[in-house]
Length: 210
Ligand SMILES: [Zn+2]
Image (cartoon, rainbow, N blue to C red; front, top):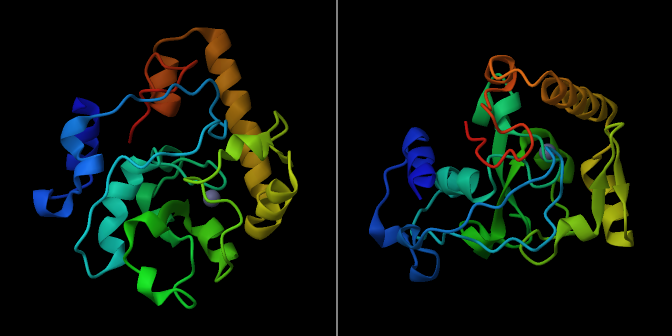
């Protein structure tokens, strides 16, 4: 709970109770899931923790979405932490496009957190995989060469839609996994924070927060 509050506070968010729906109120807290690898798609569908309402600009929901989706792109799994410009490289993505579903423009349940590149590539396409409806880990998996492999037909469509195997992203993933492997092997408690700022969490990543 403390971590969540700290993360929200650092994002500059001013929380008003009037924007928080009871089912996901911040005050209820929630468990932080462990992640065995840096690039592991969720093996269960995402259950939203927050339910803010009332903003007229969808961008106003970005602070909640950052925390909601663990500060990473729901599609390619790249994290804010690994971008020099942090959240400036991430955006609010509409599952159901703005053009075809204007009534859902500011509907929090229609919003996810995505890197700007994935968001731009999707354009106005309808959702293939909604991370709140489907466990993306049942459709997609990332291999040590940095590639994303489809486990289902929907997974293949998602890869095509967001070009999840775009060459530079694939190579960046491979390099990041190689770096993690080296750091884990070195067992250096000093090197880890200086490279990735993750302290002693090389194996779980559960405490990674910007
Ligand atoms: Zn992405």
